[in-house]
Image (tube, rainbow, N blue to C red; front, top):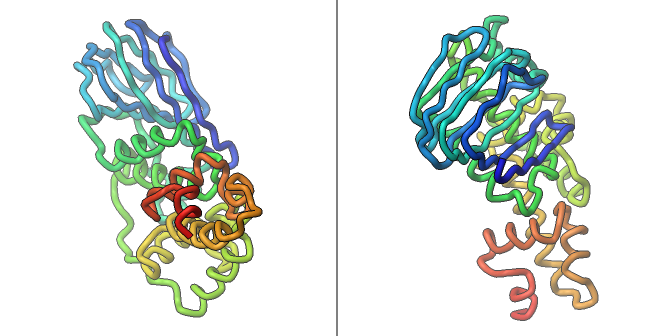
Amino acid sequence: MLEHNVMTAASSGLTFYYNRRAPGCMLEHQHDAHQITLTISGQPKVCWRSATRSEACFTAAEGNLIVTPAHESHRIHWDSAWESMGFYVARSVTETVARAMGLGRRAEVISSFSECDPAIYGLARSVQQGIGNDTLSCRLYAESVANVLAARLLVEHSRERRAPTYTAAALSAAAMHRVECFILENLERNISVSDIAAVLDLSAYHFSRRFRARAGMSPYQYVTRQRIERARGLLGDPRLAIAEIADRAGFSSQSHFNKQFRALVGTTPRCYREGL
């Protein structure tokens, strides 16, 4: 293996991995979690076989996706250099999301190969860009990613392959106020979607859908904006180091803070402070 990077968010049941491999193979094995493998680059001939699927051979291309369920034996061989990335999603996550979606026992993730799943590929690319910032250490982000992946697996890569038939009702103004107060009181903490959802006694999956219907953005996006606003206020105090401001605003690291600040404000925290 030429390069291997892993980010794990154990409390969220999610692991992201990036591999750059020389030609080779992996003998029959299995994982405790559902595995999603996506091709980034290279065009090796890949032969993959699982316990419930006959051998599939294909020439890899960017975006190709292989899904292997938890505890299912499989093996794989590739004949030239292969750059890939992917996720391990804990079975407990898909089971929780399946219950929240009202799906039956047949909503089991199955072995599958797809030319492309734009939703999963785009999400993986986003996580990959945050490897240096350890973005999955943010529980809010990691749990959001895990829930989106679980829902996608259940809708597109399971026996039932059907989306929920209801439309999520937006949170009421009173419920939104309670959520906003909780978030502002806990910005410094590494809170998760489940922590916020518990304020309203909702599952993380249902809460996220209802929150987005009300706010027009995900809980993670909303909390990030609130953290940036707090940081902008703190940057006016020259006694505070930028690393301390990142910590007080609830960011997992200064590098993560810098990246998010630039994305939302258009400049770095240091340049913003100099312009005050």
